[in-house]
Length: 245
Image (cartoon, rainbow, N blue to C red; front, side, top):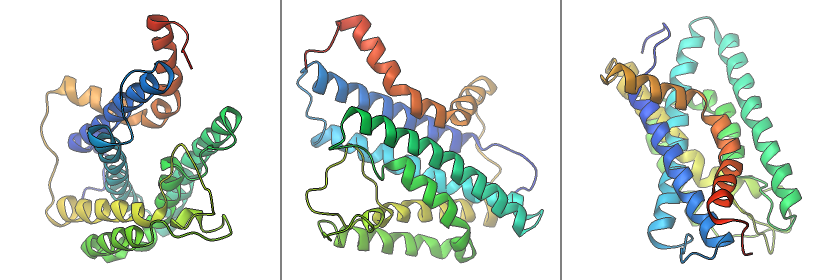
């Protein structure tokens, strides 16, 4: 794995595909929920798009943060942790904005531990697991198995919410607990460690124009995540008028 700054176009491409999937899914969700289009976004193909998109975001997060951690660690462990904490706090701040915005919209289903919350915590935890390198593939699979095994478990507290154990009558617009989803981040760590560090892969070659586009989208992915829903709603209102719900 290189210690000098270098972007891997395939990682930017994967993150761009995740953003595209997110925009497509949320457009379909808004059309079904607000304009009564016949979209069952909670099942079938739409459910598959939503889960694939989330998995891509988390996988790429594991890959990209592994690369960044290894690079900054060359300047010392403290430099790596400074970078990790800064990035984790940036994502956590964005997650808090999502929580506040959705609470104002609907206090009964607001987002308490959505995908941004999951990524923020995962980014912070990742350096603790990095020493396991490719073994994180097995640890990730184990986390996914455990997470699916405890699905549906409840407790009379919200303190276990981040681990997949829910309080009674819990409902949320977006929920991605660490179990099983941190497992996907760990798999991304193992994949990046194997491909870029062990095998020394220098990245795929794409036309410079495409690489620049994917790089820009990837770089601004957090901002895109925060603004895409208001933009979608504005565009739909311009085309179809105010919602019927």
